[in-house]
Image 1 (spheres, rainbow, N blue to C red):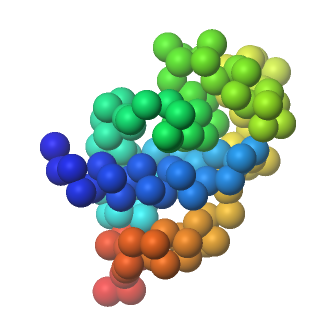
Image 2: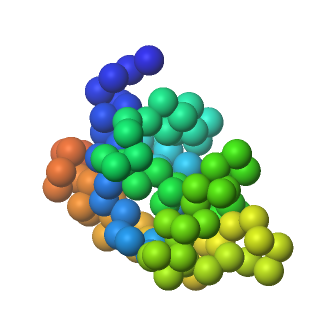
Length: 118
């Protein structure tokens, strides 16, 4: 596992403001990698106090089902409401500003591989 990539992914996750979410695919696009790799990196995350992992969802706005009970109070505290099915949030409503996030990521980490204009 690439430790540098893991730390960079975590740095991007820390940039997501409270009350907002991003998808594994949103993160993957910044790095030019597969969303499944982002999911794998997130599954070996640092302690919860240091990484706002609950702000990362799938493309439908759903957190991992196994973590749903832990997500509920965190989302409630941040003002994120659940869809009527109770599984996740409306990602179009709660998605972070991806352009601003990309700018912040590039300021912090340098040029993002997935954003190159080749």
